[in-house]
Image (cartoon, rainbow over the protein chains, first blue to last red):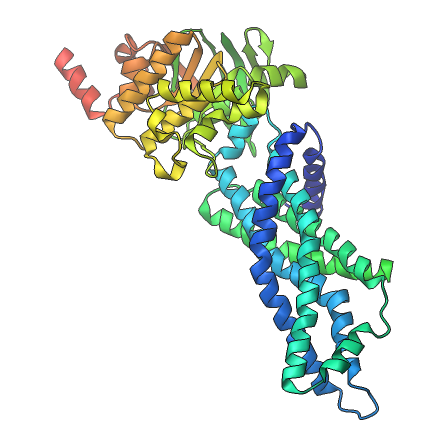
Length: 245
Length: 251
């Protein structure tokens, strides 16, 4: 199947999610379950990654800023802007593409090869809508919360690493994260996250939903889902930066 | 009653089903038999609406499934119960939740009514004690019975079973066959079973349709199947040691 056909099929798949929907009460329960599976279960990995990324960014920025004409607070200013603009939304979403994307693709792929999706279809249900729409809605709601946590932890990680290593004083760090603050960076990060959440869940679901074959193909679908999601996130990242900044 | 007329299906130019026709009556267990790769499961999927055939009609009490509108398809689907080859139970739900699932999704019954009905169906297949277990915690035979309970929970008019005995020991296979036969008689539903199990053929085959390489080669009942003069069917039947011995002892 060539790329164009696949993209076309992906958009048709997105269309099927919104036709013949089930009762709202069904989705409400599903969305809550998915929010736990996709969001709450990802807090640990997001916390670890973001804290260390903030710490490393602070230490490496301090290492590179050797000029005596550049004040120390610039280190935390850089940590803050990098965190808000790129590290928290993009890097965290790439990590989530690995964790959540493979989970979605392998889950749906297994349901496909074990005929669970067929079982839903013969009951007269729209299996795509029933299985995928709650995942997308849950991710769109929960990912911004994860990214907010990631942002805080990344800046905190920078603070801990910077102050413990002596690269910057606590006063300078706090001054830096407040200096020249552009408030739009926060909604920009959240807008990016919502787009990434949609892309990661829908692409992974598309890959898993159309799995054919056996266990080997489920593995392949999972890998392809992660690869495609990461590429989509990076392309969207560039486009959003061009459009919104 | 289900009528299929001239069902034709091909995949990438390879003809898998070529003009299959047949009639399946209520209160009867109709079997579709044949070797592996003869198109039995594809035919079942064409009948239940999972694969669209290139040609032909599938009529449920005169209503054509494939040329019907969305409402007709939905109505027909709600009259079906399907037992899949691997049971197709939802891994994340308990046995009881699996059985109750169609009621949750397709009816407006109260929780109490749904629980009563699901528990009744579990009781009917003898699994009331396994209600709170997960599918991964029950045996293959129990999974099939849960699948049957889920298939009958909506009081279907049509029951489809795709290789209900696959992967089961002979004794459990016979029990599953008996259960399918009992349910068919009790509710007077039109039951269609895909199988290549000779025990099922000789046990519950009230109407039998033999497929070979996508063609229907024979149609009859369990009473006259052993007298067939179709070489492909003879080869299929007598590949089984027990049937061979049975035939010898008859002679």
